[in-house]
Length: 341
Image 1 (cartoon, one colour):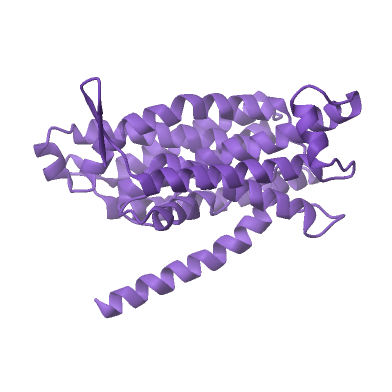
Image 2 (image 1 turned 30 degrees about the horizontal axis):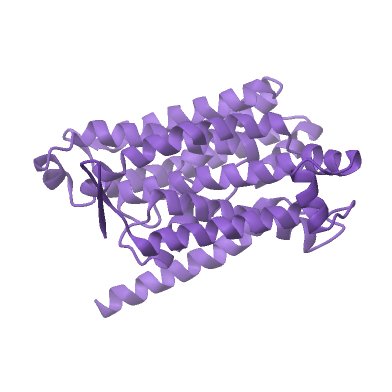
């Protein structure tokens, strides 16, 4: 459906809008439930009163200081991983072209580990995650470069190789650290939202606020790139400049999300494909993929907190278990389609 207003034509897909509203509602309801449950339980009306400014001081402390930073970190990290995953999968034209499969998340984790173990953490952790992500992205891009362009299959193959090498580097860094630092790093590498505060929320929220609009603006040339470099170039798309711009945005989202919550596995892989199937689109939409990532991570974090009470699992344990099953199903269904074809 095309809507024309003030001389501007907008292509609107009602199903995509409906799916986006539904997953946003799921994320909001999950956040509301997470505000209510815990060692100091609150009823949903008490949570709503607190959020409207009519709660008592204890409720305000529990909601605003203890639970809201964790919930917001989960939502913004989910959006960042969902959008970055959709960008990488569309650039590589492969559903396995996720940042946690082709090395970008692991590169950010390596930089963050250097900041955490060698420089004492704090701001150096976030700086290390961004620096590591950008360096690894540049390395993969240059190694995949052939004859003036970057081909999708080369990008994936080079990324998988870099990912394997960096995983070994991360393991080596942990073995050289003190016992306490090594335990802290091992938990962080699993992907965890435990103990997250406003200092984790703000950087990833700012990155999403900047990166998401830029990615949406670039979504039209991204769609044309799916037709092939030659066709996109013939239609006026500056192919390599657009590809580099999208890579920078996706790497920044991946790096800041990794700095906030660690390399939470499979959200970036699964969210775009879930969004694509729900919207019945040939390619995952960036905004819907981001909202789906937020809903998935919020649900996973609520499950990690409550499924094995009083033990709170790192959220990455739950997403890893669910993501492994999803990956097996994705490979099985792809193999079945190949045999039929």
